Length: 171
Picture 1 (cartoon, one colour):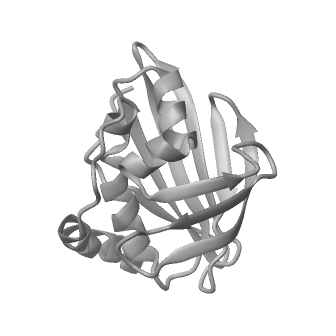
Picture 2: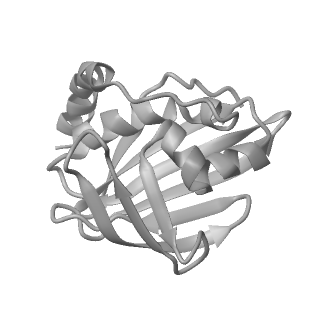
């Protein structure tokens, strides 16, 4: 299967909520990508500061925060944990209290395929969230090798119109 890593994620309507889905092929072994998705020091390389209490496992508490803003998420829970294939956590937020972030990995030759999604979203912040994940996921492959790739608000802003068009087409 050919995967375009630059392609936009897909916004889907599921009942009264929305889901954002990205499919990416990473030229890294599944174990290295798994580490980039689940180890706080690797997560910080591509996404943001994140902790799991008492450690990364099913049922753990999840907290994340962005250094350059006041944005903080508390009250999340790891709801799926099947190393090195499946990892999911809740992202409770006032505009999407039932949101779940899900990472599914499949071996693919000398690398792996990632299906990354966030479900349970409302329309508020949806296109910004989609653009944000798009940018952050671009740093995931580097994080597998401990390379820090900060997000780019400029790139995120440039992507928003394409996600806004997707959302408008669903209305």
